[in-house]
Image 1 (cartoon, rainbow, N blue to C red):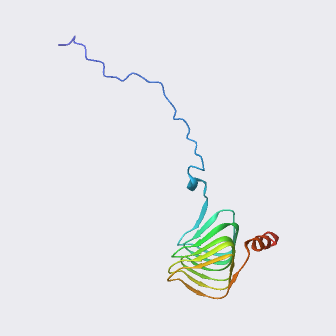
Image 2 (tube, one colour):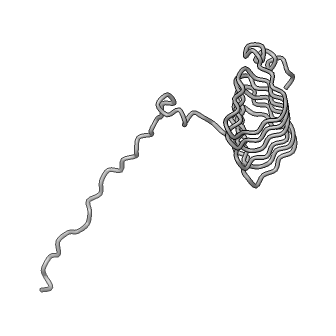
Image 3 (cartoon, helix red, strand yellow):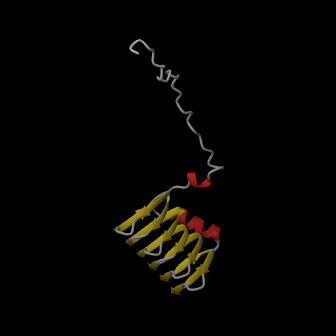
Length: 151
């Protein structure tokens, strides 16, 4: 009764293995390579915004936005009063000001834009609202204009 051996229930130590670091190939995961800045619904920014990432605006912006090689999206809750210089501009919310895009401007369903637009492609989807002037430009000319503008 007292001299009986209990079975050994301890787990033998194993050699610790560190997980191998996982490398990603941006070609396999295109979203991993995409960088985006977000202005949240509770934010209000007044002044100049510029950057090298795409920007999505859920809040309010009043000023100037410059994204020479990137996209700007004014989301449903977004309210922008600014002059915009970008590669691509998507309006889903409300936008007032002039837009100069080197690739395209899209006003989506329920998007509301007031001001002058200049781009090689301008798309107004069903249910969108636009008041202003449209100037269809050659993408090469617009790209050169953007390069020569002071930062």
